[in-house]
Length: 384
Ligand code: UD1
Image (cartoon, rainbow, N blue to C red; front, side):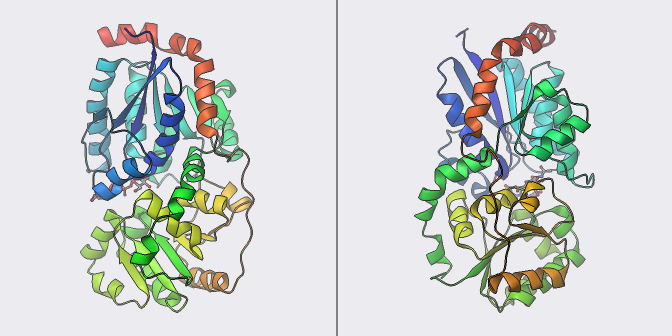
């Protein structure tokens, strides 16, 4: 026994990497702490995973579970089976999960069943839409967590309404914004615009991957109509998520997408290249969770093609507007934006690049309590 505390952080899918990177940086500064990174392998393509480790200077994961794709139950169950083995071997003092993907809920459930304390970073966000897999993942993870680190005030209110004990809840800001602040200068040096021929002209940047938008032919056709409607207002850069690419092909829409004037279809991009494009875009069209926050921080107009958001501060004080798949509205708003009309954002409190440090401080200050939540009982549970 080294006598050090041991934390295991989990990454699985693309939006997890930029959240764990600042935590790793903060944890690494603490001499009395050993930090392990477990990659579940939920995302496995190099451009959905490896490039983020390089861009964000994350070390190679200590353990790679290699679970890959599958139905929700398959993916979640595979992560649980493999992660349990890691926990039994490593016996960490704490498991840290981020965000709302299947790996998040799978690992928090595995840890909680072994009576290992769980910290959830980005807790409390609610879209109140239980048809979203992420909403279920968020709710279950929060109920199981011992430390709930929240990005915005609405999250604190949601957890209070759900009866989560106040002493477990900490408003700390946004670790994803920590990464953005740390890497924006480096991102400015990316040459990605050259490869898309974006020399000075205004352009629209698009990301779409929600099942509700892309798993349905009718909805993908609406997206096509939006592109056709805005193709006169500058280039449209669309790095395509593997799920979306697969559906476009399955629905036989590839040709029609290729035929839209000004639409540039690209492979998924790394963190620095995407940040470079986002910082100079005229407008973002998206259904991502994280991009709503990044555009609010950067004061870049954002249209979110969803009916709801779990990040209401991006609407209330940020640049975000919700449209669902209202084709005319998205086209109208995009044109207005090109005409110079958009609201100006205020950056939400504590989105200042120091969220990970706050989390590390809180965890280290309560490490005594952590062992009373976990270790005595854990030893018994693991030794059974
Ligand atoms: C997942 C998250 C979502 C997050 C998104 C970011 C859940 C429930 N959803 O959705 O919250 O916003 O990641 O990308 O966890 N695929 C590949 N290569 C990969 C990864 C996926 O080809 O490296 C393809 C596979 O066909 C797979 C499909 O994409 O079946 C979907 O992947 P999956 O991890 O199930 O969910 P995402 O849609 O990526």
